[in-house]
Amino acid sequence: MLRLRNIDVFYGKIHAVKRASLHVDKGEIVALIGGNGAGKTTLLTTISGLNRPTEGTIEFDGQDITRARANTIVKLGVSHVPEGRLVFKPMKVEDNLLLGAFNRFSLKSRAKVARDIQAMYDMFPVLGERRNQAAGTLSGGEQQMLAIGRALMARPRVLLLDEPSMGLAPQITREIFRHIRELRDRFDLTVLVVEQNARMALRSADRGYVLETGRIILQGPSEELLENRDVQRAYLGRD
Ligand code: ATP
Image (cartoon, rainbow, N blue to C red):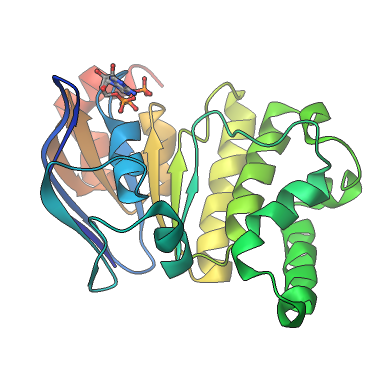
């Protein structure tokens, strides 16, 4: 579904991603873990067209999207939930959701968009209860749900999630990851999730990649990574 081959990304002289190759098959949840500054965010922004690789290729559903524009990539079916959630805080919850569907707006699609908003409220009832409230008044976990809901409004086939656990209590993080699995099943999604919270991410994912200073140093099924001594020492700490 999504395949990166030998991707290099630079910020000036900083070599943020080095020869990274990874793939995400249809219906999979894949976790990309690694410490601060490992290049996780850069890999996601490169997939969604916000950064350009100097080398390598990115394929989505058999199509080369390496040099495609960000809005084209969204239209093709890749939605990105950015780090820090970035919901539009002064706007109502429902208007945030509507914005996620901006690429679908036409008179014909209005009924469908309304139906999708309802599907988001079914999935995240708290958003429905607060639909007329400013997004900034939601808790961190609720804002994360809103950011995910907004991304889903574009009807993506692949969801890119950047640090969904950031700033959230463990219990809320667990809830978010439970939602991610539900969403995958319900909307037939493929998910690539970047996380510093390696344990939580690997427990929900099918497979994982470990990124260290821009390089993918390990990959495998989540259970294997959870049991790997080096991963345990570097990223899992104590339970
Ligand atoms: P974090 O979890 O802390 O966000 P990360 O694994 O997502 O880390 P990136 O944010 O991708 O890592 O950063 C990778 C490297 O690129 C770091 O050395 C970072 O300082 C550098 N970097 C990231 N964004 C920029 C930028 N806009 N300009 C210059 N350097 C950048």
